[in-house]
Image 1 (cartoon, each protein chain N blue to C red):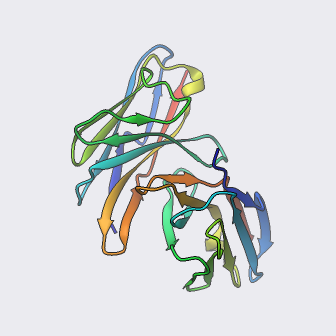
Image 2: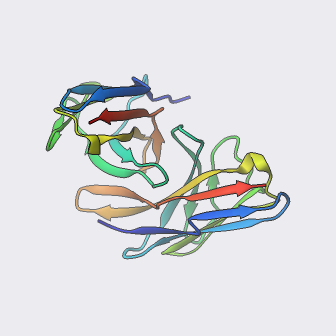
Image 3: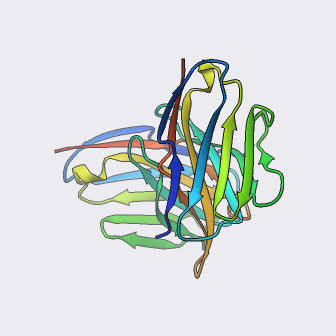
Length: 110
Length: 117
């Protein structure tokens, strides 16, 4: 069974702090995607990483794909209340068939 | 980006009745759509892959006779929850796969919250 474990499961921080969310698996994925989901809405794609060791930046968000393509991290610099949400990683099992991680619920306190 | 809609956004039904949820890709054609289920404060669980013109592929543990999927056109897939029970109450999300210059991408609908009383 493929399992994508995210840590931490819950995170509550003050505005302006930095944070890192981890996504780990024992399986290799052809690509990995990160999503952010607001309550009552569908997930919104943030980034796709494909190459082992790849680093992508999206404003204050930095995404890294592990060298072995089994794990990934999301680092947020100077968190803002607007960053609050459920962050989901998802591994591509092939043919764009996604397997979602366990999720990290982030709350940024003003 | 591409837009995927779901209808209805919320539905309340009585136990024993059936409910149909529609998923539409509004500005692109999708040969493949996916149906997910999400419990409160939990991640998404893939229920089935819906292929236009053929039978859906269900994940292990998902009852195909209970969750009927029809992908009748390149822009529409439907999920029918038959003989609904309170334990079927959940947030159901669909996604549609689109081909882009960067490879295939899934675009998600806004979800449908089903409450079975």
